[in-house]
Length: 246
Ligand SMILES: C[S@@+](CC[C@H](N)C(=O)[O-])C[C@H]1O[C@@H](n2cnc3c(N)ncnc32)[C@H](O)[C@@H]1O
Image 1 (cartoon, protein in one colour):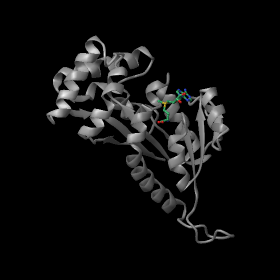
Image 2: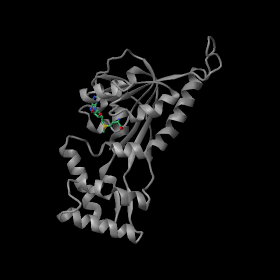
Image 3: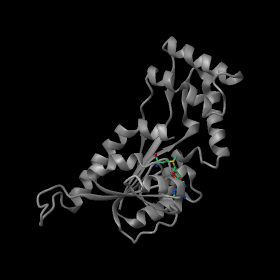
């Protein structure tokens, strides 16, 4: 999933550009007084479930960013690497109401026990906007050749065995509405080019719990390589996003 967050970086940047511009319009786009007068207003962000801080790196261009994660090891590692990262549960954020301009998450809600409570908390500590950047939906995966559908089904099962909701994407609107919010929904719609597919085959097969050089995994790998060679391979992993204005 961190690979997916990396592929989505240009899409995230596009969305952050739009959101930063709207928030600046709401706040006044330039600093009105003091030493920084006339400069763009720096915005404040909270990354909920920040993991290894990859998205925080992208967001620093818009202002300051704080991360929270429930994984003590990640907090220690990246907190010591120049990022402001706190240990916290997304369902109980240790911040006052309206603390940040924008509160966002990426590939988080599929992992949490109470997604509606997490969305409510994100809205509570945000002044302007909640951004749910990416939640996948493994029943919407499209793979060609069709024989690879088994890989998507096994990836879904493996995620569910690890405690994830593999259908989080389609539930985003429902969860936001239950949290008392009105989301604008979208789907990151790009498909992979043949070279990306070729480079990712082994990792995809492993994420289905198979080995690419053994048994069924090797059969799947052969089918995938063949489809890359003859140009018929298609991969589409639907990833939903939601923007909520407060
Ligand atoms: C799939 S990773 C995504 C990391 C990052 N947001 C990204 O997109 O690259 C999910 C992260 O959410 C964190 N997480 C899961 N449940 C959480 C919770 N209830 N509170 C805070 N963090 C949580 C995990 O520790 C993990 O770092």
